[in-house]
Picture 1 (tube, rainbow, N blue to C red):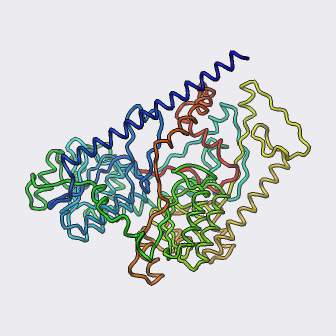
Picture 2 (cartoon, rainbow, N blue to C red):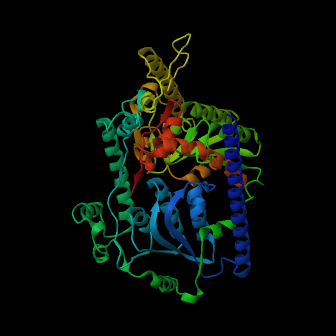
Picture 3 (cartoon, one colour):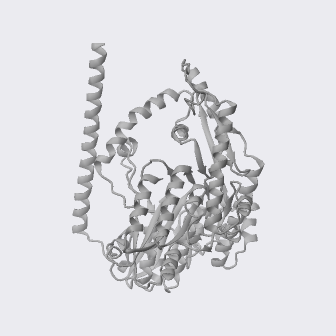
Length: 596
C-alpha cells in the first residue's frame, strides 16, 4: 500500500510538472509570437494605402464569429494554432471595402472553402452588395470546388488554372449510422420520441435511413439546390439550371479538364496564378507594382470597436452558435452563460433592442427552455427582439427563436424540426466485455433511474414517453403563441420535420428572407431610431491558463481511448464520448453535414 501511495504521488507530481512545462512552452510561444509580430509591424507596417485590393482567401472552415483557438497537444506540437476565418469579419471587411476610397477591387483566391450553404450565401450576398459600389471583383482558383464556385460566380472575371477543374457535383449530405459500431462495443440505445420525422435518433438504433427521413431530405436538398442554381445562373450569363445539371449528370464536369469548363462558359479564362497580379492591375487601370493587397482583418481592425458601447441607443447582437447544452465551452450555447447576458441586456437602459443570431441544431430541452424564458423577460421590458437565422436554427434552435417579434432567415437556412426525443444509452454489454456485473439494490423501482448500466423496463420507458410528450406539448404551445399559429397547424408542420427557409416562410415559421444586417435594420426601424450603435455578445477571452483544465482532462479521456482502442477507430472516439455525455432528453435536429 505504501509503495502504491508513493507511486501515485510520484505520478501526480510528474503530471503536474509536465503540465507546468507545457504551460511554459505555450507562454514562450505566445510571447515570441507577439514580439515577432510587433517587430515585423514596425519594419513593415500594413496600411490601406491608395490602390489597395482586398484579398479574401476562400480556404478552410468559416466560423460564425471569431472564436478562441481550441487547444490540444497535437495542435501544439504541429504548430497548427491558427484561428478560423469568421463570417462576421469577412462581411464587415467587404462592407468596409465598398466605402473605402483606397480599396479599388476585391480579389477572391479560391482554395477549397468549407462552410454550410447559408454561410456561403451570406458571404456571396455581401459580395453582391459590394458590386453596387461599382468596384470590381476578380476571382481565381487552382481548383474550383463547389463552395468556391458558388461564391466566385459573383466575380466580374473568373479565372481557372489551366491544370485545374470545376468541381460542380450537386448538393448532398452524408449521415453516419452508428448502430453497428455501438453493437460492436456493447452499447445499445433506448429511444422515446415525438414526431414521425424526428430522425436524429436513427443513427443509433438503425443501420439505414427510414423512408420519412429520406423523403424530407430529398425535398430539402432539392429546394436548396434549385436556389443555388438560380444564384449561379443569374450571375453567369449563358448558363441555365438545365445546362448545369446536364454538365454534372451527363458530362461529369468535375472530372473534366479546365478547357472543358471554359468552353461551356463556367469560367472566363485560363491563367496561372503568377499572372493574376498583372490581370488585377490592368482591370483597375493601375501598374502591378502599385498594387497593395490587404487582408480582411486589417480592414476590420481600423474600425472604431467602442463606437457601439458609447451609444445611448444600442442594438445588441447576441450570437447563439453551436449545440444548446447544460454546460459546455466556447463552441456551444450554455444557458448558464447566456441567461445572465440576456437578463443584463434587458435591464440595461442603453440597450433598446436585440438581434438573436441563431446558428444551432438545438440540444438540451432544459437549456432551450431557460434561454427562451430569458428572452421572454427581455421582451417584457418593452424591447424589440428579432432573430437572424444562420446555417441552422432547428429544434432547440427554433425553440429559442419562435418568440421573437420578427424572424429573418437566409434562403438556404435549415429550420423547423419541432420535436423532442429521449435517448438513453445502455452500456450493460460493454461492462460485460470488461468483466463487470452491476448489481442494484433499491427501495423503489426508480431509485437509480435512468440507469446507464441496465436496460429500462416497460414502466420506466412509459414514464419517459410521457415526459417527452409533455415536453413536446410545451414546445408546440410556445411556437403557437410566438408565431400566432393554431396548435393544430403547429403539430401538422412539426413532427420533427426540417424545412428550407423559403418553405418555412410559406408555412409561417419565418417572417422574411434576409441576413443579419436586415434584422438589425428592422429592429432600428421598429424602434424608430436612426442613430444607434451595434454591440456584439458574448465576448470571448482566451487566457493561457485556460489550457490547464484541458491538459488535466486528457488523462481521463485517454483511459476511455485505451479501453476502446481494440474496438473503435480513433475517428469515432470523440463522437462516442460526445453521445455518452449528452443529457437523455434532447430537442436536436437530425444530424446532417450539408455541403458542396
